[in-house]
Length: 253
Image (tube, rainbow, N blue to C red):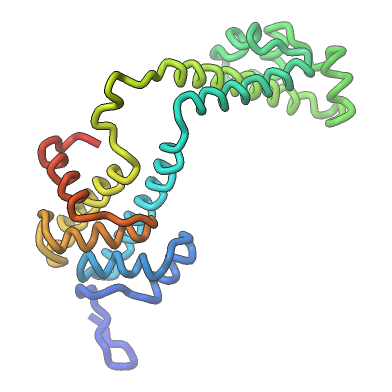
């Protein structure tokens, strides 16, 4: 242990949020510093390295929730319509280059020898980047010295068209079951479960920070503070329900 100039001890002792570090990390990660600090405080005293681990856990929690929450607003039919629209736009762009995506894809997207250039791959499926259509449209855009770049762009566009089409087919196959989807976790429910997992992980790493995971005030305070960081609120009833499912089905999401 060392001593600072002001006479205070510099040690890895358990303590409350290091506000300077929390605000610095919050600025980098674009999180609300006050809510981030409140979540760390709600967990219990942690050493500096424990606080940094907690910040990264909370950052992942925030990002996962925002993504899941945005995705949950899109229905399967909306996703299919958007993917088909994307596939049609890519197909039109390829047609301007003299490429039929549907007929070219099976051969163009198979495995080629390492180092095979995109232009060679196009030639193997009888697509010539110097052809009349491609030459007319492309030489005025990128010049004749960029042929390889154009070829690579075409290959990537064909791949993207295939991916969008396949994803649209997958979205079409999703049909709501009779009675609605069963036990499908909501974005909020998944966030609560993930927060409990963070609580359990950090308690195991830093046992002096507080009692082991259990339904009660300590865990509720942390879950609610973490939820506030994500911009939502969690009731004790909601936490209790997720906690029961987690105990009954440890491997469930």
